[in-house]
Image 1 (tube, rainbow over the protein chains, first blue to last red):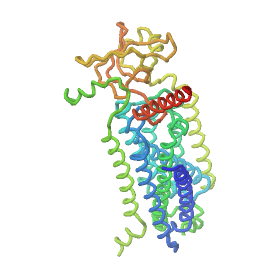
Image 2 (spheres, chains in turn blue, red, green):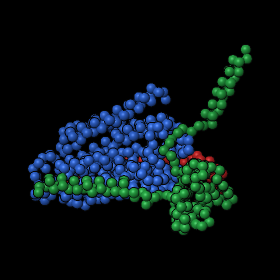
Image 3 (cartoon, each protein chain N blue to C red):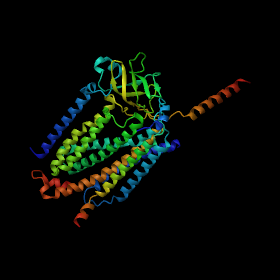
Image 4 (cartoon, each protein chain N blue to C red):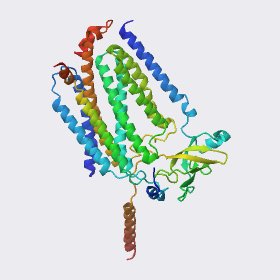
Length: 273
Length: 58
Length: 162
């Protein structure tokens, strides 16, 4: 692959992903609310096609184009799916934290719906990322799992977000659900910096974060293409999940018995509509 | 269990310091990644608003 | 108190709780008490207290210390603190087949027991990987390098002869 092509890929994938995030935010405002008249189909199909194309390209680069690794041989190729998944999980859960704080500061069904979406999607990426990590661990470390600080912290974090999702499911009053889950979300978030820094703070089996300095340029490029592709996917997932959450919330709040009695109700209802 | 037969090539290279093969792990990882993403996309499609309520109400 | 102010109060309180929890973990020296593995020097310094319970020993494989008995599939090697000359080292004996990345100088974590014989009986052997990812120097690379060297020698020799 020529240097020009590499630069095009480097810049192009980043621009495509960031533009998709921008479009995603715009669609979240215009298209996701119930009864929106925006026809999002062409944009959504375009984004999905872009994500899929970049993902296939990234996977091909990871599996075929990049050289094998000095010590890990081919097994290191799992990095191209494991690392982007973990990054996306972290990103989604950071947004979740922002929504949880945001909801308590200024109540809005939109923030609550986005919190629901980010937790679920974050859990998806985190869970399969963890499974991929375990698979990678077997040939390299010699074990699928050990209770080292990084792995333990990550497992605990996933459990707390499963608890968060369970809480959301079991509390029927949308008002109470939103407040309680915000608190649980804020407390759960404590684990995220711990997961990130665990490899620096403590001795662990898992190595510390790699940087472009510790990874060969071609491998870095392939990793970035995969990561940007995952970011577009993340945007699409969040957008759709957010839309579903908004519709559910509207249906719940429209039911008279679910309406909270002692709240500034009118501006609640208008926010959804 | 690992039998002596499958073990023997392994034993010969103790201390080599480089992983040979292991494509079964790589395929497993990529398949799990793709499967998770597509199943989640499918679940989002099935849960899309308007659809379920149409089915149940009309 | 309105709903809004109550919610804000909840937000502040839960943020404080979360922050305190994080600070406790980050600066509370939890890592000091709950180490994932002992270095050889630390384990030896424990003296008799280290004898008996299953513990993890971590460090680097001492160069030249690997002894592999193929007949009995037993492996002996020494784990050292670091590469400093004179660093503490502990002899490990295990019947585990080591992961393929096992070699001299690689980081290892061995789970097992230590006793007064001063041999660490490993029941589980794991190796670390660094955060570096590099393309290998293949045989072809080496061959190419060698050929280029020869070519260069030939040209310099040719330049010298006239």
